[in-house]
Image (tube, one colour):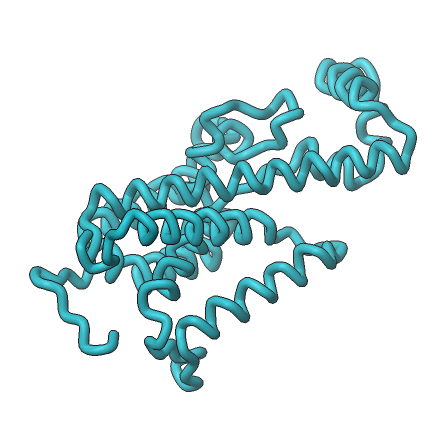
Length: 249
């Protein structure tokens, strides 16, 4: 990292270690609890659209500790360790945890704004009102009518399908790493070297393209990733404008 060797450097600093443990335990609970006690914790704690009756305010936080597959949690935790460890060693546990949580919540809020815009665009195109969606959902959940299932798939997806994962927070961490160590080399697939500033920029542009494209079958919350990256950048700029050197934390 350009010769940087902080005092007391830890390969696995405490916040990173505990975040990995918590995410692993929650993922294990996601796999086992529905079978053991028949409780759908994804429905309870993953982030639902804030216009849906399934939404609860605490989901802005709890969704960050849940994942949809082994690959999902593995790559998220690997990225958290790879890019976050150096930041926690520099900033200390409290500042790093604050940064991580703010980026995660900010990513979720940004994604909710994009979902709101998309939802109302679909309503305008179909002539369906939000009140109708709510009424049909009530009838559907009380087994009175199957009307809700007849709504366009995109409305059902926004209303029912939750968002989960630490990716939004990790994109904030990735941006912070690129901001502080722009010329550090990142080896893509362990072979192809690329400076951090270019890696981060290209990655964000890809996410923007995929988010705008909104391809059918793409279940990745690209705008949550972009929201985390934006919040991370804003925080880094704010700290820098307060005349703090990144190495003072």
